[in-house]
Amino acid sequence: MKSDITIGGYLPLDSVLHGLDPRTKLLGLIAMLASIFWSPVPAGVLATAVPIFILAVLSRAGWKIWLRSTYRFAVMLAAVLGLNVFFRTQGRPVFMGQWELPITWEGLEIGLIFTFQIMQAIVAALVLTFTTSPTEMSRGVELLSKPLKRLRVPVDDLGMVVLLAMRFVPLLQQELNATIEAQKSRGVDFRKGRLSTRAGNLVALLSPALSGALRRADLLALAMTARGFQPGGTRTQFKPLKFRRADRTAVGVLLLFLGCRLTLLP
Amino acid sequence: MIRLRNIRFRYNSRYVLDGLDFSVNPGDRVGLVGPNGSGKTTLCHIIMGLLAPDSGEVEVFGKLRKSEADFREIRGRIGFLFQDADDQLFCPTVLEDVAFGPLNMGKTPEEAKGIVHETLRSLHLEGLADRVTYRLSGGEKRLVSLATVLAMDPEILIFDEPTAGLDEETTERLISILNDSDLTYVLISHDRDFVSRTTNTVYQLGRGTMCRMG
Image (cartoon, rainbow over all chains, first blue to last red):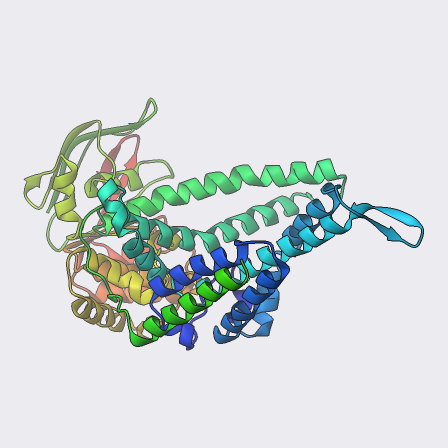
């Protein structure tokens, strides 16, 4: 089962985090993101890494899943690091022996900190998606956004939108894989050729993938209508959410950490 | 139960249904056959109110259906099985997917859970309740799709190509499920053998109209 996880796929395991209310986890993620990006102070960024590491362990996903999931972001992280290091030219230049490199110590520091911050954000988000089923997630989003109802935001449908968006991830992956295989069978090689040719091949994938996604969305809407779903209509909840003792403890720990982080390492 | 009169429907300028009459009575097991693009699926979508005809009358359960509200009332009473099971299954687990319809109809979580387990049991799918839907095999997806529809306790079922992509074993299983049931249904299929073994009336669609074959 674990072998074919998709990006952010839910892992049906039994952990402390799995047992928490999705609202606690969603608010926790927001708090952790605030802590991560509050200020680019090395000590502060490192301080946030500790609870995030603990959360990753508590998710019980296992190091193999973590390795495979985070590896998918390697190119993006490398690009973030490269852009920050090579395009931030102000500061003390870095020397290798007598050679002056086209980078600065300040660029290197900011690049490393920013990359580390993004990595932490990815891990925090994955902790949420690994431990929260799409249904719980959609219900959590729906309940947390309830105050927006006063502004006539269709919050009842917001949860369903989140649910369907998550359902679409594996479907779109399948659609894209099928298109890639179809193109490969007709001789397209996505790994060979000049950069412009390869980019052109990738663009050619977008059109069928997009039209496939739209076709599916259309049929999905029909399928939901055929099974009695009405946007904005009342619907019974399968598992009503409950705020338990573990949630209160989690919120308490979170607030304590956030307070310390923002006051001691501003 | 269903009575369509003088139905006309077109895609762009081409009429796929042109003055078509069609009816289904209690106990009928109707097969619809015909080439691709002959309007079989369109006809079923019109019955469900998912498409509106350009002209003609749609009468379902003894009442003329015109507005969205009219059709909303019948959607719990007519089960629709889509051609591609992936379009039918959109919840994370089988349990939640089968419960989707009953919950929309206002059933309590306990009632919905009971319906789900009873439906899965009747199709011999008990072990699938907690499985993730998109990881099911093609045959399992098809049968779970049927469960999602049966969970709404429909009076009529509409199947759009139910055997598409199914292996022989699952097809046989589907045939025995249909033959063991006392459901009234309309079935679209290119599989003549399947149609002959599961229906008692067959209509051929083509050039906008239909004719009875057997």
